[in-house]
Length: 112
Length: 108
Image (tube, rainbow over all chains, first blue to last red; front, side, top):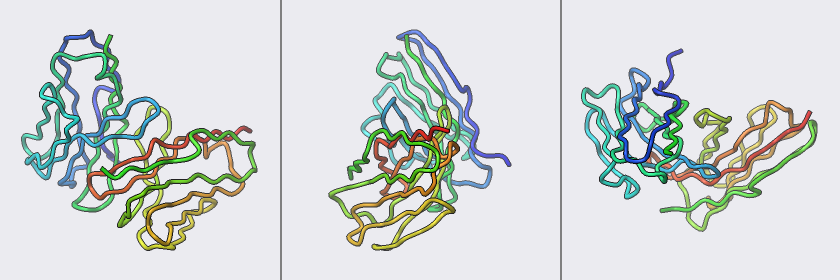
């Protein structure tokens, strides 16, 4: 069973560094989502793609954040000039159209 | 943004006891979803409720959607240690809005 895969599982970086996360969705899923979850909170929507098109971005996604899904398959989320406030679990999910979302295990980012 | 409030924030019970967690909003939702999340993992969908007044059962878990589609509850009968986790409600279609969750701990 190949679910949503995220890499790396954990990332520790120093403030000011750039980081990139990867998400591999379930193969036949055309939609891909990024969420962020901080301790004691539920996930917050960041952005989503339908195939390769990025259709919506949350106001939470500052200019330092960029997401791509170049061929409508895997996606990357890059954070430039990381800040301590970026420390969170970054979750990727995928779906087939409006059907249910399947979440990956997330990438836990710690910015020192 | 449609806000979902969950209560209680934490719940610790003994194995075999029953528990109920609540999800409330001032907004009407076309549907609500319940997820369970274990530490270091992503949320896993348990159920989607769509119709006001709907009751769905998943083994020992009973989910209810309020008549006005503004609130929902999750009841667990005879809780087991394997039920331990963070229970999240969410609504809003593809752009899900999640509550902050209820952390449930079932002690053996």
